[in-house]
Length: 396
Ligand code: AMP
Image (tube, rainbow, N blue to C red):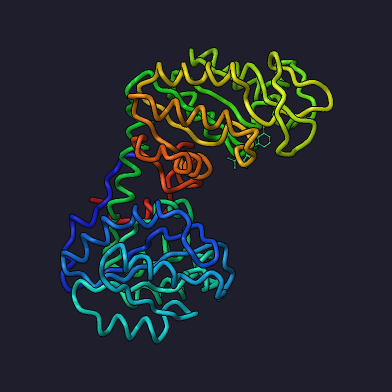
């Protein structure tokens, strides 16, 4: 995707009501935010707009609300943002999102003030991109800014619909940053370029594998996905995850990699268990998983092989764990990849989701060049798809 969208620096915002779609879909436990990556990611845009004297109106979805749901209120986000910005963020607690509280807060706001609206998914129209909610959002704004990279792959009222009802729709710093790193890596990588894909399901990564095979020098496939590739090569996989319907696809991709001169690396050994449980791991000699066992992580030889490929690369992108990293006995492969990337001098990009959580939990966050705030969005970007929430913004 070539980037030709207007940004917040291309427009005048002083005294204007600026509606900013953020991605505050943060993990919470007992009303406490447990990972602030997305809040921190939103701060540069919010601070810029405050400094330029905009009346800043923030909105976001949280969780999978299908209407008003007190357990999914954005109130805790308003509190934490107030601390991070060192300024009160007025929370407009309307179940209708744009209700009396929001309208009143906007009407009395001074330049530089910040308001947060309630969870956009409290409105049923949000996910269906219906005009009624888009119009409500637009009715309290002069300008719209999308900075929610993590939601940019969804055509909802607050990401796409609202742009029909405002004259000015531009992107914020986070979206610019995400597109810069992901875009440059994919379109113009410093080579060798290595992509690492893991996770459970082949089907989720089909389009990514196809698109990346045209771009990378090395493609590493680990995690549950690898067993379908093993089976396609004739190895025994025991009770490991298998996607029977994609066996031909796996063969095709291995052929395609050969034709394109891409080095396709699969694991060469496994950590296995008799059942899907966090029990002590047995290590296999080679790719084969004996009957009665399932592969739950890559083995130590594979860790070395993958770490070597990472060391050789100048650009590395990673999406998806190498095993069941939630189990302490099967986290080693994922940790090894994270560590190899953290130790590497390459441009290192983490494509959101589970891999981002793993890297942050291990304390390697600041060792990576970029950790995407969007799991689904970064995958769709890596598939080469246009993201509707970005496509809808004004061109330069
Ligand atoms: P995804 O959402 O496709 O990125 O997959 C992430 C999930 O894949 C995590 O919850 C892992 O536990 C799971 N996973 C990774 N490797 C395996 C494996 N070998 N067997 C079963 N599940 C796996």
